[in-house]
Image (cartoon, rainbow, N blue to C red; front, side, top):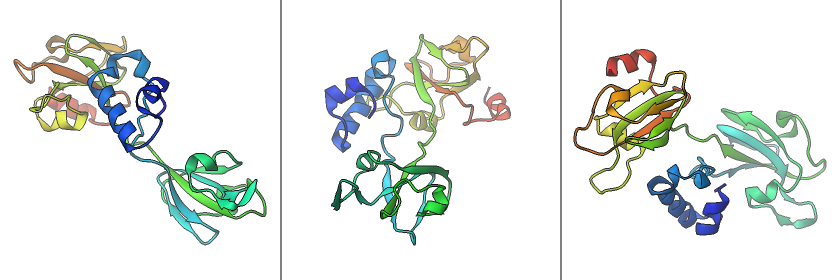
Length: 215
């Protein structure tokens, strides 16, 4: 969790802290600039994927090579990713299996010391919630417009909003902003229901032809 405000409120790490911070962000804080640094990657934590030169790591993200034990305390194993980063490391971007070796990573951060590899997974791409109905959505990509809450009264995630099959979509013009409204999106997909907008900044969810078909 990267937001200092949320760290002070709920703690720096741990499933409980992350769950509470995520809930606060989704229900209250997403529209508050103080919470805009909330990490997008709270579920895919770095993990130890190999120790020694015979290990093969499957990593879709960043592969890190560093010491297996603390250089200042040779009898103490490094078991946390944050502790690994205290020392010199080598890294590379990975999409598949890689050997946990100096040769594979291209450098030896700490010669003559036993090594281990950690994988820092690539965050899963998801559109971000950008506005309630009637507000401006700051976006330079594609905006999705649909119901704001589910039957339980909670804010719908992007995937859950799409599952309702009552949503509209439109590309943002060159102003990098779009009003989250029936007029701007060209349709009222859920009449009589409060709505919200999500921004697909990278235009990865739908192709141009799929957006045209939706309209």
